Amino acid sequence: MSEFINNHSKRKKKLKEALRQIHAGEPYEEVKQIFADILKEASAGEIAEIEQALIAEGLPVEDIQYLCDVHVAMFRESLDQQSPAEMSPGHPVYTLRAENELANLVLNETRALIDKFKAEPDVENRAKLLQGILKLREYDRHYERKENLLFSFLERYGFSGPSSVMWGIHDDIRKLWKEITKMLESEAPASRDMALEIEKRFAQMESAMREMFYKEERILLPNALERLSEADWRAIHDQEDEFGFSFVRRGDDWPGVDSAAPDEKTDTIIQETPEDKPTSERIESMSNFPLSTGDLTLSQINLLLTHLPVDMTFVDEHDEVRYYSETPERIFKRAPAIIGRKVEKCHPPASVNKVLEIVKDFRSGKRDSAEFWIQMGGKFIHIRYFAMRDAEGNYRGTLEVSQDITELRKLEGEKRLLDG
Picture 1 (cartoon, one colour):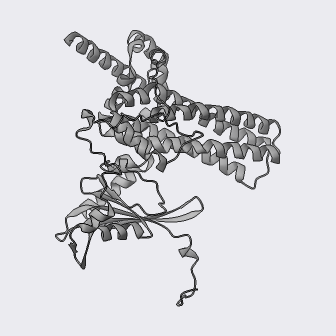
Picture 2 (cartoon, rainbow, N blue to C red):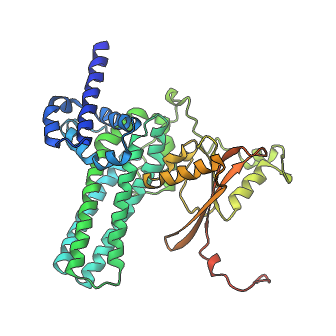
């Protein structure tokens, strides 16, 4: 056993050195030739662990993201030899793989539409291509489930490399989707120049998506299956509907009737199921809570928070998400998997520094609030952050409040009477 551990450790050390040389600018083919024997033996787990170790040692996530395809190319021979585990329809991994297969077909269809538009850049082919791109963008639900559910559960086991690297690649793909859509929806007349520019962006997006299919199948999902317990997968399964699915209807073979058995691996990871939540009768029977102005039962507090016309998310003084409000129409999607997650892991890499800067300023007392506004899906969204401090002025967390103010911005004059 000790010999196996030593060999494993030595191999990981050499694999890390190979990646370091790539990041230092050494020619890819030369590095691959030097480390050829070791590269053939690398497992999916080792590759992910090495990337995570490099991030922990200070290598910028952006650098790893930029060279991610090179990493996969180096290890492809080894990865191709690893057979994917068989899963039942309904299991989150089965669903993710099914979505990838169908997304691959949609990519092929959209590529054919690109070629038609390039050959004949007329109104009809432009409209068909736009519909193809909009259909392809439905795949974003796949990325949202990864980011909000799968990554969140992996982070609980100290495995945060994928969320750091893959989320950034997702956002690159989303950016290209939006750019192509904007060009096709613009008032500019269809032309060959437009077709060539769209094809250029599509080729970048297509390559990134296909590489991500491979990274999920050969690296991410094997690592997730190795680390997550049956109870974890059930919790992910129960929260998937919040984000929806891409091109598929989820199967119902899994989980089976015996899947609710206790799992010792999750003793320290508390998952609240709908059955665990207090019923209205249990909540109502609890004593009133004295507040600064009045006193309310737990039921009344819950009703108050869920009827406010805003979305709220609370991050405590340890930078962990402790609460989000379940209002009838949420602006930003949330699921129970976010509870306990570090705030920097809840945001795409491009905006993490901004979030951390706000929290840092709140903690130091430099500022007490921050606000932003964005246009999203035809709505005008106002987002505000507030520093929460106790009576002694100690920082106790951050409150995020988001509100759709599209209709509010249209108000004029006065309204003093109730309409019939």
